[in-house]
Amino acid sequence: MPDNNDLQTTDDVILLGGRKVGRGHAPFMIAELSGNHNQSLDTALALVDQAAKAGAHAIKLQTYTADTMTLDTQAKGFVIEDKNSLWYGENLYTLYQKASTPYEWHPIIFEHAKAQGMLAFSSPFDASAVDFLESLDVPCYKVASFELTDVPLIRKVASTGKPMIMSTGMASLSEIELAVRTAKSAGCNDIILLKCTSTYPAAATDTNLLTIPALRTNFACTVGLSDHTKGIGVSVASIALGASVIEKHFVLDRSAGGVDADFSLEPNEFALLTEECKRAYEALGEVKFGGTRNEQKSKQFRRSLYVSKPVVAGEVFTQENLRVIRPGYGLAPKHYETVIGRRARKNIEPATPLDWSMVD
Image (cartoon, rainbow, N blue to C red; front, side, top):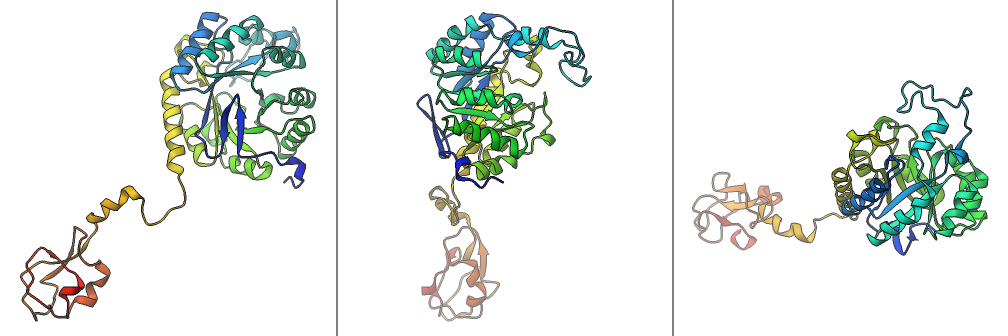
């Protein structure tokens, strides 16, 4: 566990493009476009439009070319051999060609997002991508899980002085420590750490959401979730554990395909995600006993002591003429045994709520 002060961030609230993100603020929702544009700029712009309608606060791209990611070779290790992978049999170079977002699209997509009131930023995968994104004046950066151990890249991103969002999929605690320490030493104090499971799609059983409060405790920073599971349940649950940022892959139509389509949300699903994450956040509230202001009227439906048969002055209260029933305008039920056996001070009609003035 980190114990050095230089690993502590500025915590709680970070400004991303002027928007407050962190504890005490509704979840910040990021729609990850990835390669789901299928190399169509029109599709990419439609994704932006639909993300805005679905309530996303930001869209995120990935900035790389096949050449900056890997080598153009069929050598062993450069073809995906895992039969359980969505991309089984794909050559890495060809896959990244299909998934990459052309650099010339970036300013078009970013401006389109800004016109919709959303932030737009990206994950750079090498130093040249950082330089390119700086020329577009992005408000923040995202470091992908697979790049969390790329210390030179983290140092390059942090040197911009802009907030950094870092996914922690696969990373050990010491690897996260190194990434945070590197970012801070290079000039970045505004860090958001996202719990992430780097399988595609990820199983809920592999998600380990309890890591989220541990990240906050260990690094005193804003935390969130980069969610690769199907559906919205995992993301909504993460809000209860302190997630302030939710990142989900986004697609117009899963059935139409896309490199990440299988674990991406369609617009109506993302809209539901946004709504339910906000609802979960609002439900957190505070530690409170005794009921809320809005609950006070409901107290009338509690049980209380009522006279159930006519009672004359001097008559003894018994189980036959005194009952514990709804509504709650009489004495509390805890006084039942105290009243039984005592006498009435006056005549009492049935359906009268009992109070101490009626008891001798």
